[in-house]
Length: 383
Image (cartoon, rainbow, N blue to C red; front, side, top):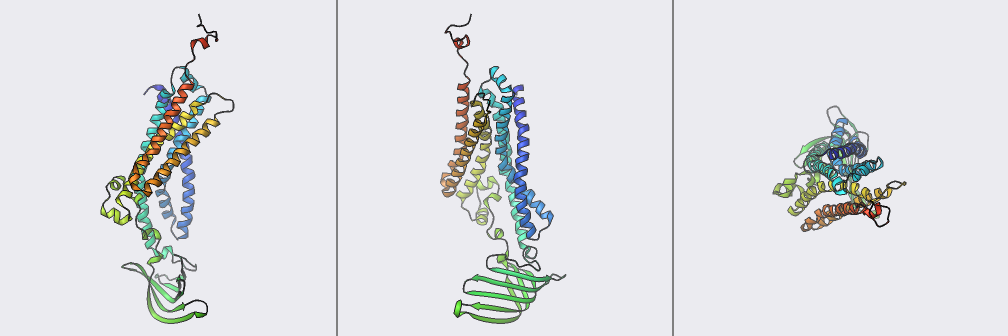
């Protein structure tokens, strides 16, 4: 690689590292705060919170890297222009197409990073997180059964526990089931135990009473039943994430391209929908070179202005947003009709066409002047 290419590439990679670190930190901290509140409210330890926040990091990085690539090329090109280095390169005869070569290499490097993340690390992290969520959801005592606090595990269910004995017994238990509009059931028990059943956790209540309120308004009727032992299925209190099955995003790309019966049964998806998810992962890394080239080529169009290059930066942002809108629209169309999966690659093709157009426009603006103009506009060449 020529020295000038290595110089531009090193500048872009340095700025890319800075912007990626800043953006990842901002996104990750925002995600970690919400996750911290959710897990701590469920009674989880700080170690579990740290594990979950670490598992979200690959997803955050895969989203941030293309934006960091765009910011690095836009800022780097602006700095090269302000320090007259870009002018010196163009005066030496380097065209916009030639200057774009190291930027394209930089975009491909970012594309490889994104490809490794979305096709390898992100599915592995999501699968691990799904397994950990299922494990935590099974621990009902830690998630919902906390003493001295009214809990609402699902809509219409209220749970209160006075205290928990050292041997694990739940003391002074109150459970209300108001999921039906014309029937409300309240369970009270002196003590209870949580045991594992075939279909999930079961609450065994001892020495208690059932109060059932039937009907509404003037037709209400209250039935009271006392019991020595009663079992109540609390599987509905388990986190909804474990009840709805696995997600397509938890599986590797190669497996999604050729989905088996086990994958389809676990996710409830069709083979066509699984392949659409795989094509979305394959197309996502292609947008990284596009983002980098948009940030570079747009800033080459404008000439020198004492007001800076804010207009070019604004147009670059508009171009990047347009490509992103195309990506979202193509994903929605392919999701609604899996037979339209080729549309997923349209944003990358459109973005490439936009970059080529911008480089062509930049080349036309910097076409060498005719000899007559250099000689002073007299129409004759200089002696």
